[in-house]
Image 1: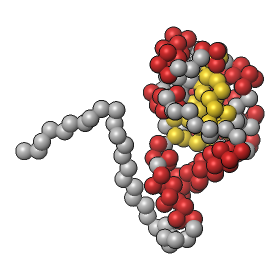
Image 2: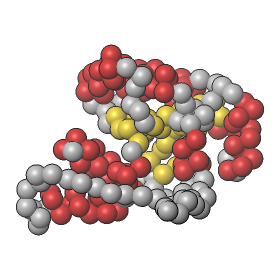
Image 3: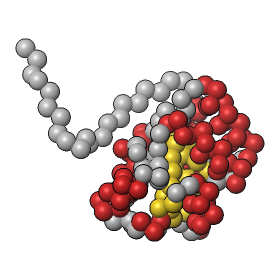
Length: 189
């Protein structure tokens, strides 16, 4: 739990510091993970500027370009091309989980922060390599657990940090979200 609260704090501080100065220049690595829609479909706001996308499947990129309205001019064939052309502050990985390590291997030495979709890695060995890269190069490496972004959890973390609720001994969090469709459960007999 302490790790999750630390990640929430880091993410909040990172977003806050970038939003006060300039928009976060965000690159996207991969479009195959279904959660990419939350960033592609995000209404324009001044805190994040999506500067480029690395996706080799041009048919997929073209389909999502039409759906979300981004230009194919920002779609690159390699991470190196995306980084050279756009100089992102951070990269969000929405591709195959097997690619998470290579995204971190590419970004970390350049000082580029990385967020990956869950799970973090395909093996403990990959996770440890990613951790070492992040520490050695001083970047933030985050796993996108949607609940980390919920206002209620950020507020709870702030109250804890301010000493307003005492020490943390145990946390039980029950969160939910509106599903894209209405869920209907059969009635119990």
